[in-house]
Length: 177
Image 1 (cartoon, one colour):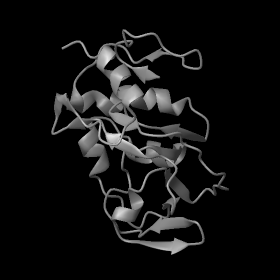
Image 2 (spheres, rainbow, N blue to C red):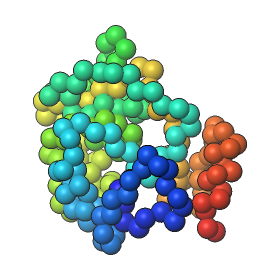
Image 3 (cartoon, rainbow, N blue to C red):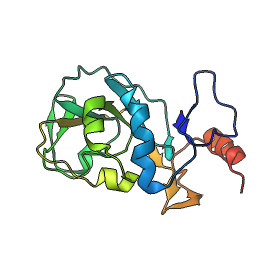
Image 4 (cartoon, rainbow, N blue to C red):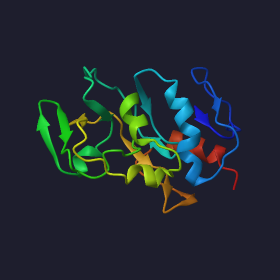
């Protein structure tokens, strides 16, 4: 886990915590994340803190090539113009939100090309790189079923639809309001 303030709850044994230091506001979002991602392997999975996974996720193996910039693990790519090939979907090279922060496997070089200084998460996603030589792909049967955890920018309105009751009860123990 990477963030600014370590969560007050106990982290599972298979989690480690990396601090980005004091949060400096939305326009410094990319500035604080970039040094972390520069140190990562050539491929890694990234998802944001407001993603609530609804069921076990099993990501099928996919042979990534250097031209693949991002592999969407949700149904996000399927919401915009795309083509299908066997078990994958390929985003049209001129479609919007190719830089979506939905749960994805990322090619580090592709991410860093667009994770430039001074960007908020929304600025990052809406750059809309088109026809840049990279492919954005996803799975027809997407492995990550999830909710956007926060509704309408209100951290007190969580989207828990379709989640199992055990997870909902656990989330309620973490909320301090």
